[in-house]
Image 1 (cartoon, rainbow, N blue to C red):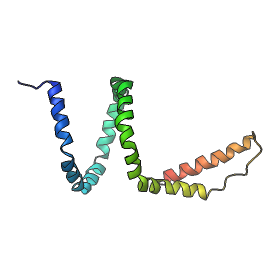
Image 2: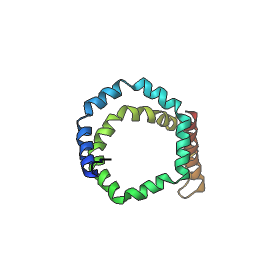
Image 3: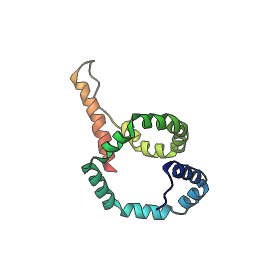
Image 4: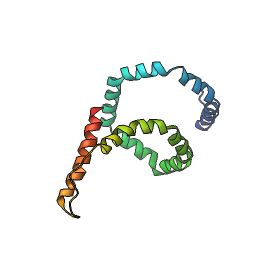
Length: 139
């Protein structure tokens, strides 16, 4: 069997992928409903796959195989370039996700503040933690 070497295959992969942005966007725009339905229906498969991956320690092995150099290279290069745009695009979603927790805190009346160092101050922390956890579990 004739097989191209890895360097030639990688170069072709890069060239073709960089030219496919328009096709990618068009495909995504046309597939939202299918994605949602199929992803929701795959919950059991997702759980089985994650359980199997945990059993074979795939996460740890993947981290060790990649190594710290790959993380630093990609996070400081690609990640740093894309981070501002990603955060900017997420503003509305962040607001929607944070609002219920901010409302919970706004409406919380914690126990009164005690003198500095008083163990009773931990009750304030506990009240915040319990309120936020209850909000999270409420959906």
